[in-house]
Image (cartoon, rainbow, N blue to C red; front, top):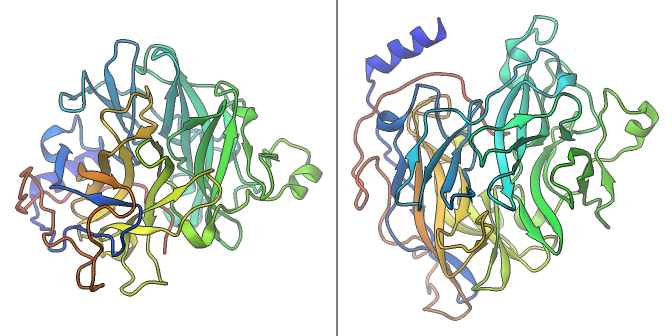
Length: 440
């Protein structure tokens, strides 16, 4: 019945236009910076390219090269699909899903609505995946969620799946062996959003694999970014989180572990909270700058104007970060009404990276993001990318009169054209889709 309703709304073809497209932000200093250098490109146009109505890019995209040296770009939702081709300019969408969701009815299974959030492969054949798992109580019984409110009955966790066929299919371990990370709190009906959310891409450094993730704690729903690492991607229990002093934090299962141990287990420690706030979506090692570069969604109330959108920061050690700087001023889901076009899920990919998993960037790259054409409750979502440049200190002139010159002179937006991109009307499709936890 749901699909009949969605199809009817799709056919209605309600027109909308983005009257406030993203605006690149030029740095107002002569230091190290990331800068948008050209117009947006449309990678996936939902209205023309989707395999079915609910096939959308609903987390930051992830990429790797498989054993046949083909680029795999994963568009994740509760069923994930891949675009595949010899390079990023020749990607073809595969309508055979690479993963799905088990939709088990109980929170202790950690296997309800499942998104591929991160992938990593050493050989192109075996691909390890971190899964963003949402227990969505609003779809369950009245006892599980009396309010039927998505945002009041959402518990999140991170789990593990693996592909042994080069990314064509991913299979998860049986519960609870697949559990990677959970807060030390059980599900509480109708008490809000909490858990560990959508890890960043995985990056390898000095024999360890690292990933950032977002924590929203219970019961206060405080939000911060955590960092975890492992030396064994095929062992879900081997991940350890940064506890403020070392990577010695052990994730627990509040349904199965000793209650005394669970009670004593702290949440993972915040990483550079004043500097990066809640940025976690994409991490690369930049060979041109000799630094790690993090991109994510944020704002900065210490600056005037306080721009909401996508930011970047630099680090030498993944723990200590520079103060975030704006890259793209954009309307975010939680700062728009139900039908306004908004933007989410940023990440960086260098198409020329020598890394199989695109965990490095060089002098140039691309900022990938999702455009929600008719609001975040809509399924009409496109995948976009902006070319960016990584600038070393003292290259070019700094802006002399902020804030007036913080914006690059032209706005870049619209739907289809790949240069000036005029905005055109598009279909308005209302349907269920996950929102990120409310941000700043």
